[in-house]
Image (cartoon, rainbow, N blue to C red):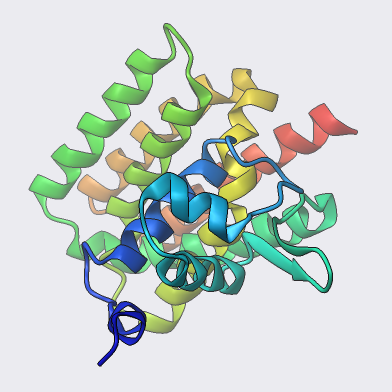
Length: 224
């Protein structure tokens, strides 16, 4: 097997392909690579100290997730923000994530609740010297605890797809609506209370959906 084929076959954590994927995705999410930024494989490979092959594999994965687009005679570029796509994706995510959270609730143990509450406390502390990128990452970490126990793999897949689709914009969502961040933390605490007190699944789902749509409403009010 040649070196190129060996790199192509790498799919395990820690492989060059995985490292390249994580590095490029982080730069997109953090805003280092902005919408429309041209992703030159050779430049990225040199920067990471890899050959072009694992970088190409990483770009293909990001294209499949909707974070990168490929145009003939242009190449790979960071996907732009379509307000209509954002609206539809957030509406869809509010439904599927609400369902996933409700289905997860009976399976979330006290340790997971404690972990989510610790993350939410970090988010609260982040409000003092607001860092929207850090806050958004913590926000995703929080919600991961709430929906990752979902026993329905199809719903869970839809949730992951929604988060991936929003990743580029979500890095700056709270930058557009910083006032929404404080409300978000309080709503998180309410969700945790509902889950630990064994609230009805419908109430948990509705609360999770309201939480998601409130962010959408705040964003639309700010940009229209």
